[in-house]
Amino acid sequence: MKKVLVTGGAGFLGSHLCDRFILEGYHVIAMDNLITGNIKNIEHLFKHPHFEYYHHDVSKFVHVPGELDYILHFASPASPIDYLKMPIQTLKVGSLGTHNLLGLAKEKNARMLIASTSEVYGDPLVHPQNEEYWGNVNPIGPRGVYDEAKRFQEAITMAYHNFHGLQTRIIRIFNTYGPRMRLDDGRALPAFMSQALKKEDITVFGDGSQTRSFCYVSDLVEGIYRLLMSDYHLPVNIGNPNEISLLDFAKEIQLLSNSESKIIFEPLPQDDPKQRKPDITRAQTILGWNPLVDRKEGLKITFDYFKKELGIA
Image (cartoon, rainbow, N blue to C red; front, side, top):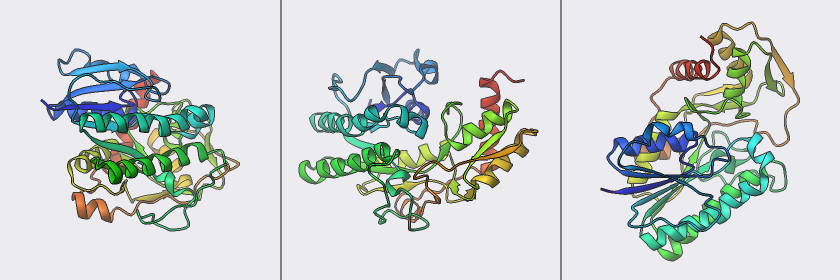
């Protein structure tokens, strides 16, 4: 039985990956220090004979006994609210954490996939963003701790691939949503939904003309799985290119929730990207991957999850 380590395994994406690999017949080790993850996300797996959980911070030395076939590095604060509160931890998990896990992958001769992000493109001057674009990032701005941690993560991963011949994979994740997102995540979708459900004003930053492209979690997990099993080592965008302005998105949530919440406008945070849309040609060509879940369908599932979490009938 093949063994996979998922760091950030109790987080939103990590927990869905644990589910997928259990389903595929792997022995799964979830590792998380729970600074943003939630044990509740993986509790349903605790009785499974091929699931283990390690409470550990990957910024410190990582030891896993026995053989290991795959490492998926998804440990990191991932929303502005988190990395503004935890700037040092964000930088450490992207640098020291990645270094520790690459060392483990080298020791175990394991293939390692890292979770990079569309944030490596910063506030892009190219639209849509393809993998050849080098980005427009402010390294000393408030978002720089996340953007540069991920850019360093890609650089050290490529160095291990080129220098040590390590099998590595790099995924650049665009906005993803679905059940197990935190309500206090701070990103647009959970913020809009929880505000609408609590009958609060829906807060849109700037004039709402900035765009995002939302990918449902099951589509993302499929893309990650295909990339891990492929022979391709350069970065691959995974996201849904169906772009929408945040103002229109807030209106969609308003309609979905049948809410009387008003939309209000707040100043745009510093370095907030004005446009975000993945060019997924590489994923389509190399992985045969396309997003399948329509936004209307995905939002309904996510909305029902949030209602349940908030105890709203």
